[in-house]
Amino acid sequence: MSAVLEAPTRAVYVELLAGCSDPTCHAFATPLHRQLDSGAYSECSVLRLPASIEEWQLEHRTARKRAWRAERLGYRFAEIARHEYVDDIFDVNTSMKERQGRPMSAGYHVRPSASPDPLYPCPRHGVHPYGVLLDETLVAYLWCYRSGDLALVSSILGHGEHLRHDVMYLLMRGAIAAELQHDGFLLYNRHDSGTPGLRFYKERCGFEPTEVAWAL
Image: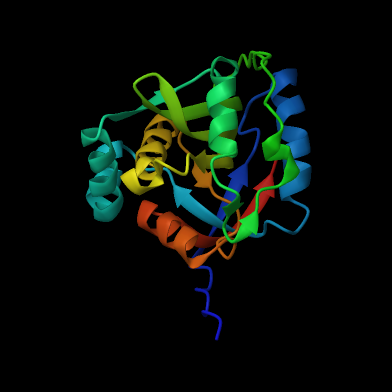
């Protein structure tokens, strides 16, 4: 028998421009708004970004303890430049044949581009790449698409050999700490997507099923 999913607990209004008038911000936000406002993302897994990382840690004991465990094992969170870790990203992508009960798609078996990301003049509009390092090796990554009030978890993946060391909790804690300075909401796909294990992870980090209204 399939699990009964929790109904949305609240509703939020998310602006993707949030007062920015720069053409670069419009060019970044407009296609993202078109995708999210299509109807498929009217209900999502959402975390209201806290006032401080200390506040988040007090409210999420399991995530806090697991992030600390990863640090004790020598891992560290970092804001990264993706083109500097092409080989490591490819190793992460190909470290497991299946994720969430499904084979990895063909795109993960193609080596990433070594070209630097574009420069985004506005800190509230652009791609924010985050990672977890062991020594100087990238073992987990999260690509966050920031657009106004939205911090969207676009891609998140960890190396199969390091997942048991709780690197994904350290990764999420670091991303939350980096994004809370811009306020808004962290969104991680639909709440009913993925396996029960993924939903357990999201809920321990503070994500809740939430109705979302999108605006430019």
